[in-house]
Amino acid sequence: MYRIYIIFFLSVCTNICWGQVDFNKIEKLNDSICNSLTKYEYPKRQAINFPSVDVSDKYKIKELHRAIPKPSRDDYDGIYDYYFVSHLSDYNPITDSIFPVKSNVTSYKLKDTYFFDINGDGKLDFIHYPLYYKAIWFDRDVYDIFIQTENGYKRISFNGFIVDIKFNEKGVLSEMKTFQPECCASGFTMFFYYKFDAMKNELLNTKTEKVLNCQFNPDSIIIHNPK
Image 1 (cartoon, rainbow, N blue to C red):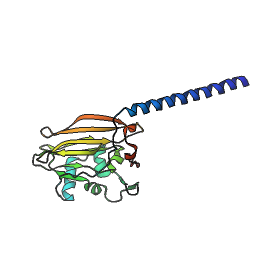
Image 2: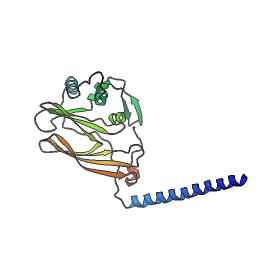
Image 3: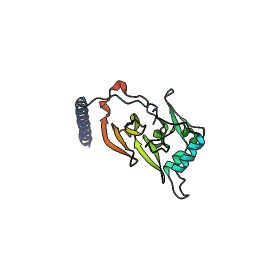
């Protein structure tokens, strides 16, 4: 009987040791792969200087309701719930902490809702672009552009927070580069490259770049995680 226990104990120890050896091999392999890949600076979240015009909160709320109609009683719309119903938390980078928003949730969102002519047709469109709280609410960075058309608003979503944005000489949105931080311990992040087609009112994802965490300069990585 004791011999069986001894054999079982030795086999477990052997498997653990081999597992450790294999894990070390994997780590060394990952290091060697990372050393051969392109290096990046970790992007910082920053407020974007949109060419927005000054409109009243009353106007913003009216247009939000036009763009996001209330669903029927039996339907659930996560977008409508986000803008008009849900509780909200935001991130304070100074204290590196998340706090509950105690003011009116919709009014709180208005400060991060910017109205300007995105497609150059003479009508006011808008973008909702907060730095942190939408990413917290959806557990990832996803933002909304609303283009005003003859049939109401067209909602266009894009992934990642903006790290670069370009407008043409007429102020029409031209290109964007965005960054999606790591989610769910995946070990990688994503860069998205977009071009805006003002004729079709479409945001085209022209390139998606997957970047391993080890490719970032360690000194540039943001320590806090507002999620």
